[in-house]
Length: 98
Image (cartoon, rainbow, N blue to C red):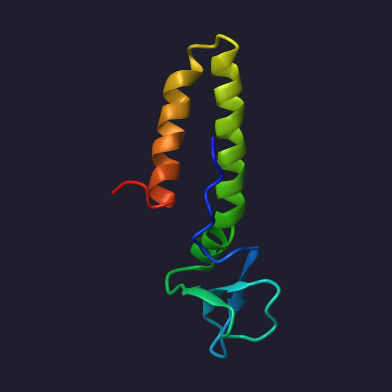
């Protein structure tokens, strides 16, 4: 399995707030308010935290896919469907499918 090049802005991402107190997603290492902006969020702080955690969630999903593949190779046929479902989601995230 070849490593795919990351196509998103690398994290860690964090929730920051603009001058009006509205949340947006920024790169943790960028101390400037708007230069590290990933996305604005005009719904809620909870949504902003979820978006900020996306790179870490993606990494954990990739690791879990590897675990499922190992289980399948060791004869756990029940992991096939779960691995296929996870791969479909990862393909969406990585732009491999619509």
